Image (cartoon, rainbow, N blue to C red; front, side, top):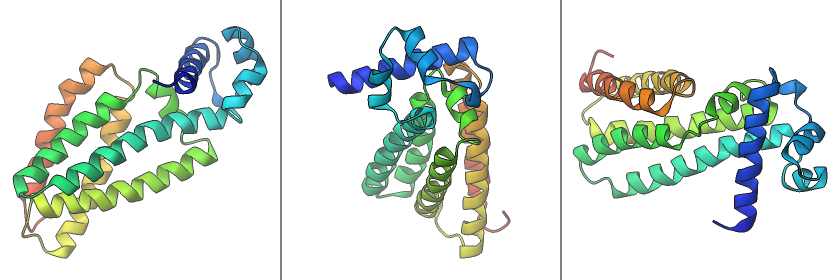
Length: 194
């Protein structure tokens, strides 16, 4: 890992630990107090992040960027329905593996910070587009209205699943993943009614 990237990761980790200990809301976070608590000059912190919102946005984008790379490669490599089904399952596992230990802080802040909200909206549109492709390839034969409805329902379920996963530890995430994957597969097997 590059020195600058490692420095950024360390600052984010220390900041999240500090936020977890002291702050109750995003709006009370102070860069000067974070810098003091981490024992670094304020300038070092502000050279990397413009403000607290930028720090949360960075963490949000880190997960999103890795998921987008994973999905783009997976869709490109999908040749059969089974490939698409495997991609759906592996992408769910990848998503929960990418979530950092402090994901509860990051994802709770997304709804209050304008830049994070804009990124969430962009990501949601992107996931919808890619889910539609995966569903169409993995569960062929659906009429367009069913494909659209199922895509929307899977996206809604995915965000509910993500909301649950950010609040529990990694072991619990993997336990519920099996049930969630089965639920999605059962839902997508129906060609006409959902």
